[in-house]
Image (cartoon, rainbow, N blue to C red; front, side, top):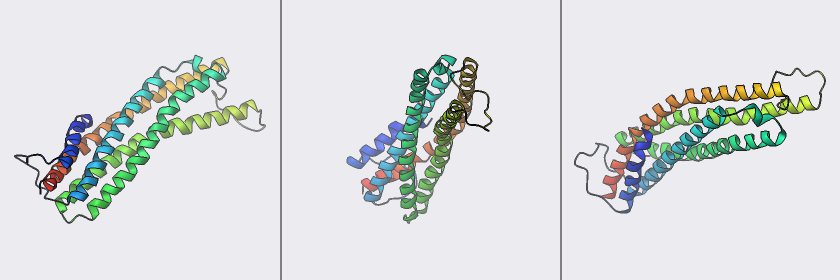
Length: 224
C-alpha cells in the first residue's frame, strides 16, 4: 500500500538532516549531489502526502454521495449546503493535484539532468506511476464540479422558462419527483467514484516500489 510508504519517506527526509548509517543492502543506484537530493526528497514527500490526502478526500466524497437523499434537494438552502460539502473536497483535490503536478515536473527535470542512468530511471518510473494516479484522481473532482455546474445551469434555464430548450428529467431539484431522481443519480455517481479506487491504488503501489530506492540513493549522497 502507498500509505505504508509514508513512514519510509519521512525517514528519508530525516536522513538529509542527519546522515544515518549505510544500509547493509542498499539499492545499486549510485551517489548523487546532496543539493539535488534535497529537492528529490522534498518533492517525493510532498507528492506522497498529496496523493494520500486525495485518497482521503475521494473516500469522503464517496460517502457523501452515497448518503444523498431527496431531502438534500427539497429547498434552496438544503441544496446549497449539500453542494458546499461536496465541492469543498473537490476543490481541495484540485489544489493538491496542481501542486503535485509542479513537483512531479521538477522531479522529471532533475532526472533529465542526472548522469546516473539507474537513478534517472527510478525517478522517471516514480513520476510515471504518479502521473497515472493523478489522471485517475482528477476525474473525480472534474465530475463533481462540472456536473453540478451543468445541473445548476439547466435548473436556472428551467426556472426562467426559456423558450425552445429541451430539459432532461431531474433538472428542477425543487420538484419532489425530480429531487428523488437527483438523489438517485448522485448515489449512482458514488459507484463510479468507487470503481476508480482500484486503479488509483495500483498506481500508488507502483510508485511505492521506486520511492525507497530514490531515498536510499540520496542517503548515500548525504553520507559522502
